[in-house]
Image (cartoon, rainbow, N blue to C red):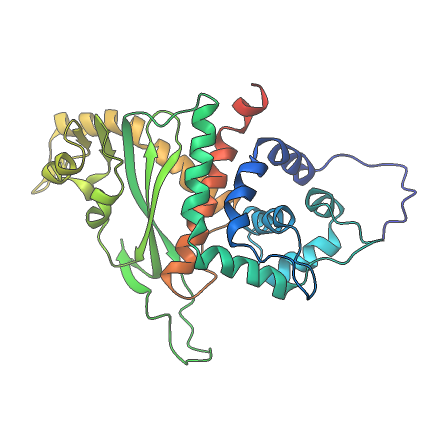
Length: 310
């Protein structure tokens, strides 16, 4: 237990991260988007401030915390309390029910997409723009397969699919990423058995001149042109036929993959840094909202150095 008289200390990675996020997140703009949907003070207990609840919600996404876990973390971590602006000498931490209700408010009003759009607009005003190249890709997010729940069933909106020699149960996260800045501009969620190419037309913003993707998107040139008439199809092509390798096509794929690989950096942040490897909620809508909010925070994380040095 810390007494407040410790002689030695150092700034932790968590503290450095939160200091950076404090500076790069456009708090005023994002709070203004939530404010119209937030409860107004009345005769009962006054609601917790919008910005404080939004900061708690972002802590959940950054550190992969459930509603009760973020309450405990705030009691346990000084730097988290400082980030949120809570002084335990004057007030308690908002309880898990309050956190849950705020999350439901965001989900009910589909504010995850609104937050992603607002962050991208903010970055555009700082000179970091979505350009005319898009990389499309998808990744599987696992879901609990246990039936030990109230309904006695697995989540009916999730599905199982095979990848290689292994089976997965869950959902699939589809994203459209800018080929230059690595900013996520479009996010979709589907059951895991939906093919990647089925989401392709919904991942393009329409002004592309080039589209990259892995071999799962090959043969979709007409679909790309229908959504983005000026776009050239740079998706990878099959290069192995009847045991023989087309070296020319293989070399072309290798060149395309130097650009396409940027999307893996985005998935690396979402799944490995922010911990979104498994769904926390039942149903696609709630998990899509979390995915969109996480994508907005991922964009800020990826360009944080540029923003801090501006």
